[in-house]
Image 1 (cartoon, rainbow, N blue to C red):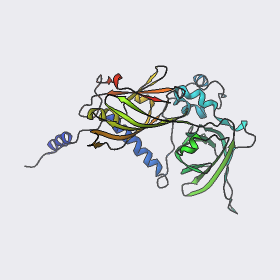
Image 2 (image 1 turned 45 degrees about the vertical axis):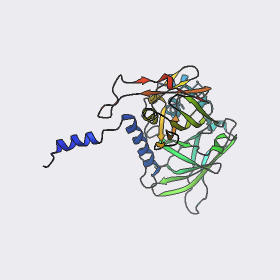
Image 3 (image 1 turned 120 degrees about the vertical axis):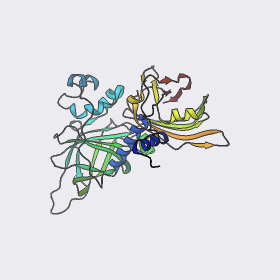
Image 4 (image 1 turned 90 degrees about the horizontal axis):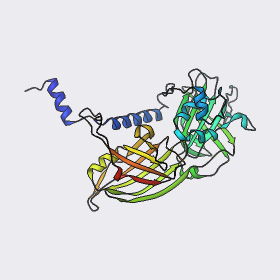
Length: 349
């Protein structure tokens, strides 16, 4: 007998229940990231900040009061996302008026007979884990290629965003992925990148900035073995004001804990006792496919957490798993959260 549409839909729902909201969010983030990485085929639309802008007076307090109000909108959206690290980060920004030579992106090779465009680099931020530079341009089109070379080392472009529609000032964010570069003490940045001045026209541009404001990111490794449900065989963490990147290699003895841990639903607590929910700290969470080890009677998987807003000066980070229940539609059941205090993992920063 032929199954009608309603019966088919019901059977499909039973066989393939909807995924949790957190997983849907992570998949959406990853799809967006992969789409952005493929922008040499499909050019990006202009990005607009999604957060409500704070009043200028409030932002002055947030940023330490050292940036003139007229300049502040260039930085405020980015600083707002750094939480307690905003004041420290603001102090690391190198402004063009502080440098002896004009900060300018110039073409690596000048084509004879063609007008050579140059772009003013108004400000630069670097903390070992993140490079951000702001570019002012009169050109109708401005975008960068995926690979950005910092002191000749390949790094990853995250986004190019106009700070305010029609402003002609673009925020360019780059993640430093080379561990040696992350921890290197530097006083000079040479940045080279392919610049699109039209959707189908790209040339290599570069700029150099010298400053004593540049800092390195701190790195630490360790393990956590005194857990009742398993252990962190090893972890590595990179800490900076802009982002904390944490890698965990897990061995877990309880299947239910694998499900809880894999989604990254942690409360994060700093050394002072301040806590952040996953909605507050999680920029991204990635996990390898769990594999069962017959010999060790445990499940192993690797996890990568990209954390923002957590106090980078804290000596420790406590990860407290949170167990939640999901309904058939993949939505969290209100009030089902259980904070697993006895399963907390302490990471030394």
